[in-house]
Length: 263
Image 1 (cartoon, rainbow, N blue to C red):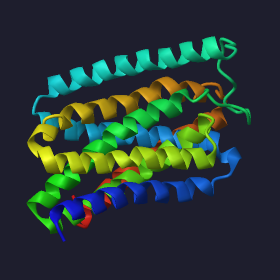
Image 2 (spheres, rainbow, N blue to C red; image 1 turned 135 degrees about the horizontal axis):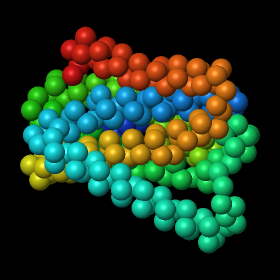
Image 3 (cartoon, rainbow, N blue to C red; image 1 turned 60 degrees about the vertical axis):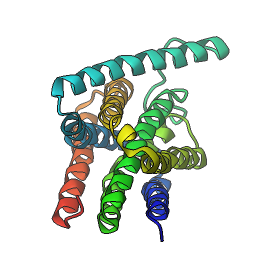
Image 4 (tube, one colour; image 1 turned 45 degrees about the horizontal axis):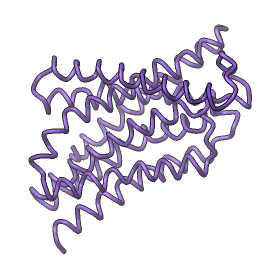
């Protein structure tokens, strides 16, 4: 089989498996758990951004200042994009000028955080495809190992993404569909890298930095403010523990992958 075939197969299967594994967990979560598990999603996003994606971006660029500048620009860009989404909502639907209470069953943010997370996830998936292609073009065995490592790293983050989509008002079916569509960016990245690896690789540091900016922005601007609507001590302790669990899931997955020699 050709290298291109393996790149396509690994990119498609790798992206889809990550999403399906995450969806399997989220599908079994009861509706009442979602607001609670958003804390886990915050931890997973921040853990992935600061412990995985940003370090990779700095190494890939070789210039920490340039990477952080891109992250700052990305955060500002996502702020502007979210403002445009809000503006559209306020002009097309009724705009009440306040956020719904985080604990309500009808609580959602009219798709804002869901849209933001899908954009960032698409950047990240594209980069994963480039990495898979580069590994296969070097050595097919290295390509398979890289694909396995990406699947392992992505599952905790995809669980968080899926939960954020549910919190944002998506049905479980739509959340799965949009996550699967976003995962196709892995395939696009892999195929483009096959035809123009050197050109695509130059964009990897910027794409990684933008993906990190998206994760940080969604966690800090969209999700954490909702946690402050439950200021009581018991809720705060629960939130802190679940955020820590999300970060721990990212750290443990990273060490597990390294321990099996998959990274």
